[in-house]
Every structure is written in C-alpha cells, then in structure tokens.
Length: 238
Image (cartoon, rainbow, N blue to C red; front, side):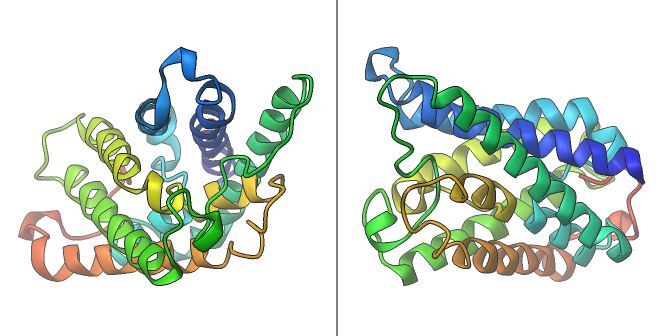
C-alpha cells in the first residue's frame, strides 16, 4: 500500500507541477508561443507520462474524481479511496509549494491567480457559477468514460495512457476559458493555497462538481457502455 500511495503522491505532484507550471512559468511569456493550447498539452503530457511510469504500481489515478469513479466502476477498492485522496492532495500541495518557490525567484513576482480555478470574477472568461458547474461535471464525466473504456479488458492493450492524456488535453482546450480547468479536486487544492484571489473560497465547487462528474461518468459506463467481458475488479486499474 505504501508504494501505491507514493506513486499517487509523485504522479499528482508531476501533474500539478508540469501542468500548472506551464501556466505560471511558460504561458506568462507570450514570446514563447505556448498559450493556453500549450498549457492544455502540458496537462495531457503529465498524465500520459506518469500513467506509463507509475500506473503499474497504483493504477495512476492522480485525481480524487478518478479514484471515486473507478471505485463506482468496480475497478478500485473502496477501502483505498481515502488514502488515495490524501496522497493525491499532499502531492498537489507539495508541487504547488515547489512551483511557488521557483516562480517567486523572479523579481517583482506576484502570485495572482497562480493557475487556480474559479467562477464569476475568477473565471478566465467570467463565466457564472451554473455554467462552471455544468462544465466541470460534464467534462469529468466524459473523462471517466474515456478512462474506463480505454482501460477495459476489451480495449487495445497498452494504449490507455495515450487516450487518457489526449482526453485531458482536449478537456483543457475546451474549459480553460470557463474555469481554468479543474476536473481534479487535488489539482485545484494545491494552487488555491498560494493564490492571491478568493480561490480557496471557491474551492468547494472544484471538489463537488468533479466528484459528481466522476460518479456520473462511472454510472453511465456501468449501465450503458460496459462490455460484458469487462466487468469485475481490474488489477491494472487506470
């Protein structure tokens, strides 16, 4: 169990450091040409690389909503859910702290939003709370369907991480203007602690909506999409 939790810690650390780091460090310089498309790709690459690197140890969740969805989808033990959540949140906070230490080395640095998520005034496009809630639920549900489908026994072997990484890239391309993209409560928590905005006050949404979306996606898979031969607890996980 300790190796699984260490893998989840490091995988979530990599996701937050790589994805949010691209937003805080690289996207801040327009001359680099990374833009929000580059940030979206960075998030997708973090998940893809860590799924291949440590997915065989922990299943490679790196996201409390994914862990919940996999438990509902009968791919993950309920007894391990809270320890996984703790490891994921700890990894996110550690990554945000390291990222802050690097970013603050620049003269005149101001954290600002610090790649945090938000609605209303804190939404990049100033989308309201209902729109942000619907966006996060819908995209997390879709993400769970990709995760469950690409790692089912009937899916081509070895390509799950690629599909998952590309799905997360697509999710960011759609929703960065809306919520700055969460679909991951752990990712939202770490950077919110360092933001100069009211990101902590809005953090509840970026726990509630992804968890609901994860549960909805898993239920859709269980009752409408799951192949007969893919039932039961999977050893490989995500």
